Length: 473
Image (cartoon, rainbow, N blue to C red):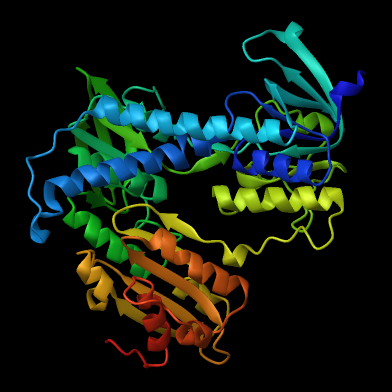
């Protein structure tokens, strides 16, 4: 075997978890190759986090131009939508981000191996070049292999994807013709975000959700508050409802749904299915090398080392389950690389301090326990809330929707959870995440300086409110 095909680490998958792990391993002196069959950046940079946020921002600006500034004395002619140009902007954003990963690979001397990687034995990876047959394959060896192949949209049997009428979030990010009507199946964060994009641009949206609320992983009170705001924006929700099937006729989709004893039909231009994501484990050679997989298809790993049951084979990110977020995969990638390299003090991921954000308008961000989860964990809790209607900066910027909710331990004052619904919750949650990481008390947050005037003051006030000490409420 040629020496240039032998590495300290081969990473299969170049999404946020994979490429970050590759970079950290290279920083620690390892010779690294990263195998990617499609594109650098994975789902997140190409058909997930980055392009969806570009469209969310563009659609928010379009909506604001239509309705948002008249109260502040700013009047303009009704804006016109150029959807192909908006999609082109999104594609430009994606290209710049993916090329940035390529630059980082070169900077850190990481070899990008293009093709589909498959383990043929522990320490051996066969790569079939993209677009070629089996004759276009090469074999690489490594002391360690890291599987970071991510996830893909779940397809439900009653609504198989056709890429045109019944679509996944991937196709929803590339539409160049504005649908008049769309049904979104699934009220998780992807379904809610995509509903927001197309609703703002002028599509009539109905969300069908099997459960009794949107955003089941969020705090119930916060999710309900966001739902009410989205309904005011024109999005319709139908809960405890299942999609039964669809028929394509005359370019329209006739979707049949069932809710209890009630049934109905929606005739729409598109059906967007967002019912979750599944781990991508196709043709990786997992069975052949003996890697254990659980009943849901996720790879089993040691939670402290990220190593599978096969020595030298590790896995991180969506493919091992848990919270399916890019920054969670990144932290696992760093930890796994440091563990492989024997880096002192590395290798720990504090999942309790992992934030999540729903990029609607307003945004919903959270870190730590929800109120229900804190109670289930055995905590006697105290709760403080503060509305943005009472925040000076929110008033000044005419962004007063939402509130901050802080959950603390009533006995120890330990900060247990922070939930923020506001225009810039994604930025504000960082303060709470750091506080959670450092095991702060609620009083630590309440007595810390918060600059005035800022939205962040609402966090301080909510912390004070847990002991009924809020100043401005």
